[in-house]
Length: 593
Image (cartoon, rainbow, N blue to C red):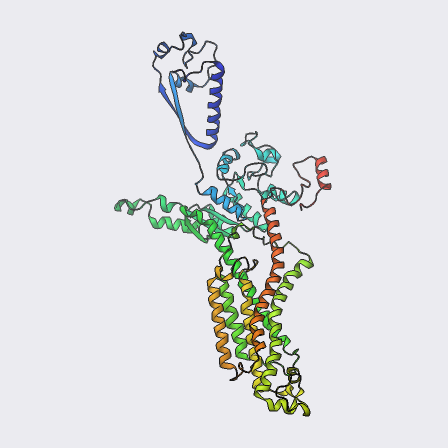
């Protein structure tokens, strides 16, 4: 009994203050509140003895002093002679997987934006439980203010950070703020006082500033249809599929009045026809996985396309260098071999790169924005083109040197009388094997089209194909070194297609080459033939290392821009500030570095 009643007026005031604080907090979060009381027996004031005190020292609800304050409303009389037991309220709480989802999106460089139909005060606690930052410059109300005056729907106080920070109110004010002040409205994660029209308009605002919008909402609400259609990608969440059970419904009632399963599916399909996925509510944890798979596919497809482009460029440079060869006989590139290289090997290896897995830290990188307004310097533009050109040139140059060796060896093997008669002097005709330089520079070879020239062209094309296949290992991991992780660990299909490509090249050479061509070649040719592809790979890795340094710097800059809460520009002239402050802001306006 002693712990139930305060023994001083100060303790009583403190208890009332705590009770009022909890009631105020509960009123912000709850929609329905219930109070519980128990009746107090009329003999309780006679039975309670507090340290020998008399009844005048006992303060109950019905024995207030004559001058005590009594509330004016009539409900106060209902709680007289009652003991307060507790209160119960129902509130809107986020699902348990939402907070990890918000954190995962932030790590992946995806800005999670919550559009709430409630006002600021009711949304703040809910957003905080979701893991959304509710500090300064973190929320915007989409209900416009009338002529700049305070909105009557908001209680002016510390909680109304949108009024104190002078953030824009309404979509039109947001557009004006973006044009005249800074890009803070694009960086916040909470919009309140939202309806379906203002939410759809904000989707357009994000897209106008080159943001890719992924919209997630309930698929059975018709108000989300326009939002889904305007977003770049939309995902619907179907909550009715699990909330409504059709197993224990009477057949007659079900046929006449009950809600039927195909009606639920029809309503959901109408609202979610613009969505790429329509997930159950328990599948919300897969949003980040969907984004990851999309990014991995894009990264792998980019790697495959880069390899295909580089391979075709290498073939073009190889064909261009054929008339520039040091030999008098221009290489004869076979048509069948060219078709196999361009239409079989390159697509086969390029398509296999689409199955490359992601790196461990892949979802910690902020992707670049599709902003056509971003302009780079000439030096920045030339670097990627020069990188592609260098990586494609080396596989095309090396076969040209191998062609010179093969041509000299095969000319002496297959047509030595022709070499002795037309390419050597009379005093050197008895030599067993003349130098290669005296053979390849023979003027008589300009019109020669024997098996030696054809086989030399076939071997040089095979050398190009092998160099390109080995160099493809540098394209599997587009911006990572193969020293950090072997490429076959992230793409087993690429390893299989690479092995198949080598087999096709070997079969093609066995079918097309003149008999005895490979046995007639010297040992140093085989050394160069098997070592130079790895030299191409080493050179490609050296060029990629330079690109990796620039890419790492770009990733760090994008992370810095993503995590900042400031605007892209320091505040310029604003309608929320006085004229004197506007002039000072205009003078000091400069881009944030």
